[in-house]
Image (cartoon, rainbow, N blue to C red; front, side, top):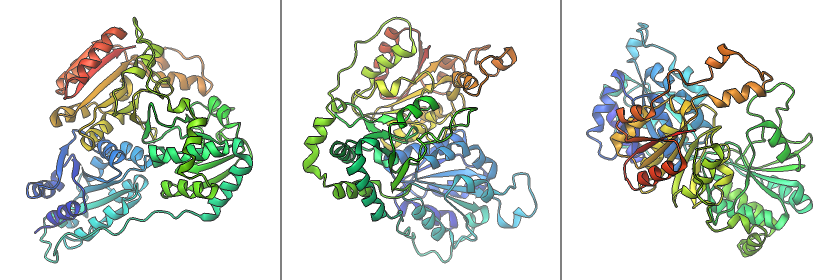
Amino acid sequence: MNGAESLLETLTGNGIEVCFANPGTSEMHFVAALDRQPGIRGVLGLFEGVVTGAADGYSRMLDAPAATLLHLGPGAANGLSNLHNALRARSSIVNIIGDHAGYHRGLDAPLTSDIEGALRPFSDWVRTSPSANTIATDAADAIGYSLPGRISSLILPADTAWNTADAYTGPVSAPPSTALTIDENVVDAAADRLRTQGPRTAILLGGRALRSEQLDVAARIAAATGASLLAETFAPRTERGAGRVTLTKIPYPVEPSVEVLRHFDSVVLIDAKPPVAFFAYPDKPSVLTRPGTAFYPLSPIGADSAKALEALADSLGTGPDTAAVSEAIYPSERAEFAPAAVPSGTITVSSLATWLSGAIPENSIVVDESITTGREFYPRTAHSHPHDYLGGTGGSIGWALPVGAGVSIASPDRKVIVLESDGSGMYMPQALWTYAREELDIVVLIFSNRKYQILRNEMSNVGVPDFGPKAQSLLDLDNPNIDWVCLSRGLGVPAAQVDTIEKLDRAFHAALADPGPQLIDVLV
């Protein structure tokens, strides 16, 4: 057995079932070993950002790691933007990055680079395997460290992959995952603050705390204390819709965020960080909470948020028998599905939000990078059919199409709806090819306003309300217009273009009836 084969046996022996890959020469022994390892599925992405984004989406749905296979430093660099997002999403990923053979590195061949240095800012754990005999143990360590919600990057020199692993006796078990402990003193202090100043306290939830079971516990606590429930602006996955707990998401712009948070003197953090502005702006605060706000990091990033919420509920005496109190205080948050009347005519931002509120299928997964076109989507879909909602986390755009691939592979029995802006979509449209090849059940809505509208808005936010033709040429996407229908069909995904709500509704429901991928170019 060679080193690459021992690596694959260790991956599958520890439950890794999918490897998203864009390999090169240095990884050929790993690729060949896939034929002898039926327990792992190889999924090709035509660009490394598709690979890392798909691994992010896969982990967000399963809370389990996927593997990626990347080619040396430049290949890994192509995937770093979505590794950045995955790091912020607290996803579990095991990256395998090929490198030159050890004896070849000193020759400074064209693809030589500092792979460890490049990966460290985008990983929680980095190691280079020194020999074929260590690969299995190194891979097991990488898997163990990736849980819960971390990114491991294992660098595999080509000779360690092709050399015989003569010391290998079988797959190595990953060490137990480690999570931060919950400080009982912080739990008691947060409970005391909620008892005395509940209405002036916000419970800010992020990460895994935005799943239904944990939201139900948070709702009991809020019902008993009068506290308000808030969600982080950029949350990896939220279970929402009719019958589920609804909470206010902190807005992206500074002014409305400050308005939401000014009502609170204290904030209990559950898998969340103190809220700050996305960027620095002239004459606007970077810290969004009131001066002097007290923070209670009940569940620090990396701790078990479910245990933290239950500990707080126990300290407050709000057990499951108080669920009826929660229902009484939050009746509207648990309303039944009741969509607004389907609008008609020209497609606008508002009519899109109204239409979407009734169009989301039950038990679907919505991946939303609609940015400015979708600024009304989140609040307007609070009582849509129950669904999972995946949002941006790290701010590096172009993530939704790749994430959609991983989401669909992780959840093949659920319909995936990708809401994508035209500018963001052009970062990694190669994901559509993977949709077609893997026959993924995904409907993509591309919102074509033919401009980087978010950057036009940011011009005003940074104090530049007026700009001329040179600046405008860097913010518009026309001349020529992008033909999304032609692009999508060329990558194997059937597509249509619509310019009214009626056409959108017909095309969308036709796409839902098709088990394969579909794209709709929505002219806004």
